[in-house]
Length: 81
Image (cartoon, rainbow, N blue to C red; front, top):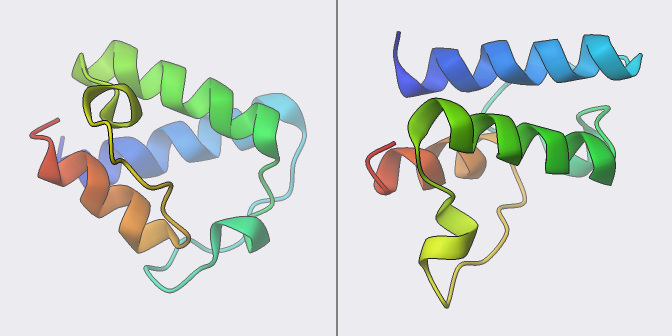
């Protein structure tokens, strides 16, 4: 499974578990408009760390939180998740 498809799967799983309506995942989708709240993102990042074995927010001192879904995916792709 590709990084992008694994992230999409985990996003959908977290949204469903937390009872959040999920917007269609496009690269341009602002994360604030995705339907996920801060708890959902914390769960998502922890799950992705389990899956990929890396937390890109902890591995880089200058990591900036992405603002769109596409930036979020590219961040994981850039660390070789």
